[in-house]
Length: 303
Image 1 (tube, helix red, strand yellow):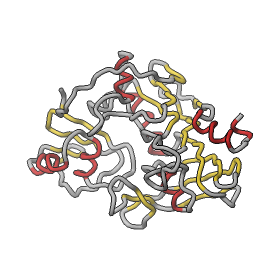
Image 2 (cartoon, one colour):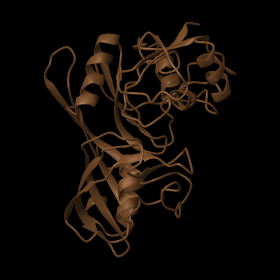
Image 3 (cartoon, one colour):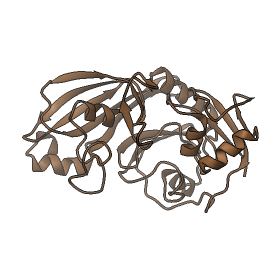
Image 4 (cartoon, one colour):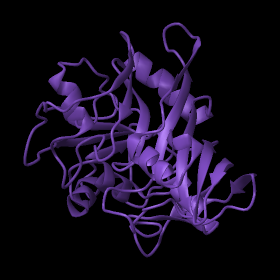
């Protein structure tokens, strides 16, 4: 198994040791020892645990990553929206983890891709082949997977310069009063819970979310949400911040329907194709779990 190599592709307010603990199968204590032993390089240079990671940082760990299981192909159905020699666009189902991580080594999108004997980029490390961006386990919708490193670098640049566009459907709690609005509020790690993000001025990054109300009900609203930045959990954090958390979001609101996760779907994805250099666009229908809720509300979108 090769050394662990990672490229930071998000703007995150995180220490080096914390970032590696979240993005490898290594414990934080082992990572700190490897950094102390100068076996972790950032952009070719030795670093410290407290180093604040930056977008495009290239991290190399002199350690052969071990886990309870090597990557195993898994026969998991995937909805392929588009595929060519460079990219695959997938409409990810709710409940599917994108890549292996501590506590979930198998049955991820990566394992499903390997079942298809897929050639994938390797810039993001052994356990994240092809993965250039992610969506949450219980968020459904579109994401692009890269088959080679040239495509990976090209798409990653667009994610950084915001020329890759993403839109979401969200059902939120409460009646949103404004037909349209922008939420411009910085997001950083929640100091009391590392699994959560929050709106904060401390150690945070700028974040901008627009939304349009598609329909209102007695106790909820159906939104079209546009991301201008790509912070972790951005939509969920911003909507909770304005007191309209995403429906059934147990982390930032309340899982008051079931344990299947928040009502959030990435329905639109657009980027410049790495080979043709032309903009491509993909769009999905409203997923069934949202349609069922909308139908129960008598919504025109539930038909």
